[in-house]
Length: 404
Image (tube, rainbow, N blue to C red; front, side):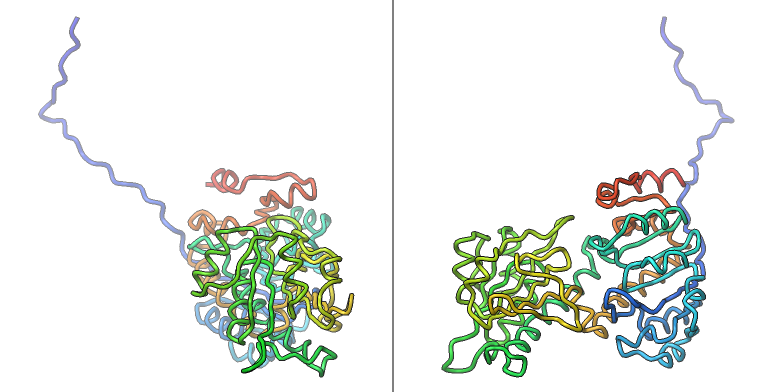
């Protein structure tokens, strides 16, 4: 039997439905607290007075602990004139809804946190403790890390800026300790006309390696770069615009080059765990007396077997008569520049977060922000941390979708 043909009644009309769009909520006022850092030899501050001035002008409140900016040469007066409230109690700072720090949350600060706060700070995975994580989870904290925060282009803006600073600083540090004033061998980095250039070996062709190479070449040094990624070596050559010596990390070739160098730089990046240790103690023992090793990778364990963490108060030691500089967080030694770089990323981020109605809404609209969140409303959303401390992992995308 044939199905009846469709027919239209004269009184029946078709009309288009209105499209339902996701409307952003109205902006929210932020209450931002910046405590003074007392751990990790931290001199940086996450927001400069100029950034605070912009935030205050947009209707937000900033509370800053007295002398929080001293390490970066910013006074309380600078912040007060920018519109911030200066307080002398750390507890008063931690009463704010949003805490912005340039060092990780310390054990002494964990009890000052209040439920449902937003923390924006570094993680420092190597120094992270399970108890601190668990207490943050118990208080339903949302935590955003500097290291994993990504911008619209998919890059890590704060990490890149700190790497640029560290890379540029490496040759300044090397030149400083090669001089007679610091019991070095009395070599001028780069050399002059008629004298062979200083030889610099860089292990790692990432952002730190590239900036170190740029600075060393500008000073007139002879630069040789090692990395196991052909892509990174090609990218570095293209970015610098010169056909400099590059090689994969082959122990025989690397050992031979280290034997005759004046400066060796460890700039390997860690992929989630410890930095690969590619230079053995035997290789270091064959290096020239008075040469210097600057191990930037010490933040994640170092890539020289002889490296051990030093401090800014006592930055160097000698082994096999080779000077070792192994200070983690080199950028903190150039705190004002580093503070400005961090602030340039965080100030627009905070303004955008306010426009979106808070972090809860921002993670819905800005997918790239999700990579930086390691705790969301008390749920651990970083897979590496959950594996390391054997804590329950929750997928952030599922968590956000379940809340809409």
